[in-house]
Image (cartoon, rainbow, N blue to C red; front, side, top):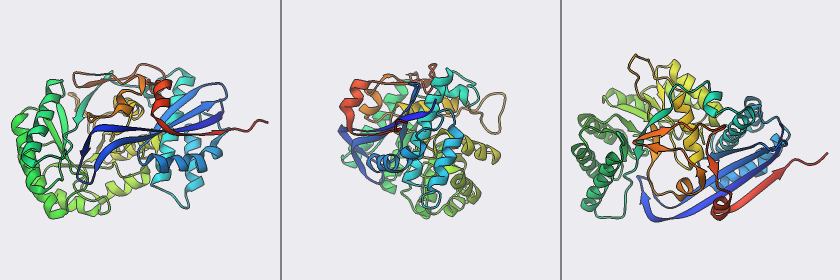
Length: 387
């Protein structure tokens, strides 16, 4: 079962309703999907988090030719082979995002080859459904009074769909953020709420917002500060009670070891399409656990990353553990995304705020070949030479 062919598919769609967060606005979605085919016909699929066109070059021009011919079951050996191949000049960033998509595809292929789900390969699922938090409430180009009303209405709609937890976007400006935090809690007094600023604040602003979040019983404060200054997380933690969450910008067990060692962070959020793939996410989870921390993946993209995170959380145990289990919530993005909602014939099913763990082999989701062709703006193919 050796790797015969590696393809990349840069898929894109324009959005009917652009949306924004603290850093910029989106008017389209771009994702790089990786397809790996073995010489016995087994195919695995993965996806990468990050700029699709750039990651595409990393796979086509660097990694793909190096791993052709390797055994598709050897996920650990292939990961470390790729790691050593780029160690001197790219221990993180785009190259690691490329490795992540390849690794995810290999796990999908491995599950199909062994007639096992990815959750079973991770050690076995301990639950058949995973509670979700709805991510949404992104900014629109509206006057702030109107925007506030629109965002609260959106959150209420998710509660009516059965979501018991959700995450809002903050970081527009501190005055608006405070109004939004308070209005959300007033509208949803029994909902588990979290807030994500996408590293919008300096330390004094973050301290002020953290106290407002704590006063309104929010569960965590996500990316309150720039990832370039991990030491500031400890200073923020010393001045507030709310749990601090971060990690979507971090990669590899080594990066997360440094982040955790700096202190101040209580919730780890590695993205399986960016942190180094499923292989590395399992090691990151072990490091988090050894420090008494929980990991819930950041999820942004299509059904492949969503399925990988669902399997991951189906195998997770909360720290420190107790008879009545602490829920570890799956991020379920509710923004407009045809690449998530229209590209697959088999999806991760979400019912009443819970994701049903896929039962099929591999990741358990299936791409629609016709829709893939329609969404693809560029495809690359690297094939093992005959003889």
